[in-house]
Length: 138
Image 1 (tube, helix red, strand yellow):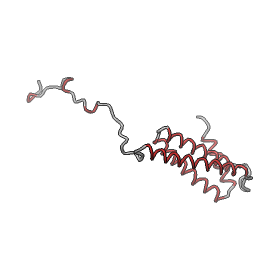
Image 2: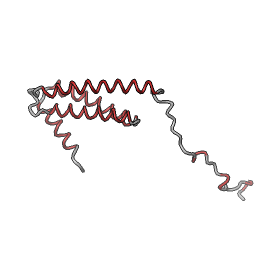
Image 3: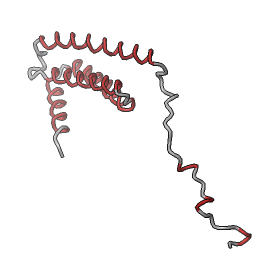
């Protein structure tokens, strides 16, 4: 017995409220019905089709004078892969990854705009080499 009549808790007295399984609550998500999800996926799918058609036309253009190695083509291919992966993440229900990829895609658009506005062969080479070094294992 503890002072003042307190007892040490027994297993039966233990509060299990924090041990209950966590239940996901998706009621806060933006998409509440199948119709809105379908409409969004249709809109994204249409955009990807249009982008694919434009990308095929861009591939036929000669490289920019400041881009003799055609690094901007690599940039466009990278962005296209990101868009396709973003779409697949959304379809698969991985919304956190889709949100992160959306941010990455927006950053790529900004970087692409800077690269095209600067028209600097040196900047393109530096960007390409940094990307190559980052992708090396280890």
